[in-house]
Length: 179
Image (tube, rainbow, N blue to C red; front, side):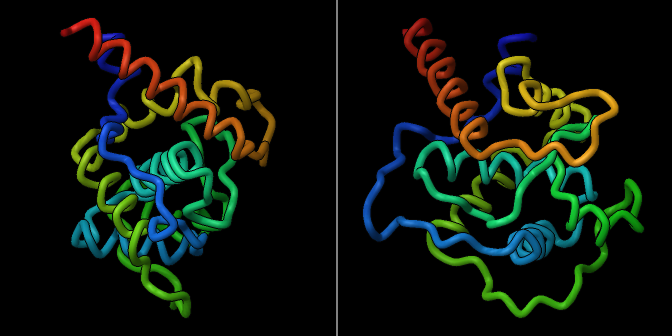
């Protein structure tokens, strides 16, 4: 069970190719959130949406050394959260987010879209509890930065990239052990 928790971030690392065509231009968290909500037929809760966006950002930072979204995530008790997005959608509680503020930003495209698609495809079927456990990985960026009772502690992007590389290394070691 412990192995499953730490390796659940199941992106296909072997097919990642870094080319000029794949370079990311950071988009707003609201544009990314709206895209994921639409892709899921508006079936994502605030908490699940936050986690999927965090994991997609972590992959962008780790695999491409680029931001997916320009806004920061903070280390909250239930895992990484973007404060601005949280306050816009907290009215939905644990129910699916029903709408987001009007967005003038462009819809994600190219690599941004692929990262968001991949986050939803690989982790969207997980329960909120499972996503929280994954984000609370003891070797991860959230665990490194969370301080009980402290609010608005930003999770540094370098820590998110480091988490990606640690997870990838563990996944590779696990795959090699199975061979």
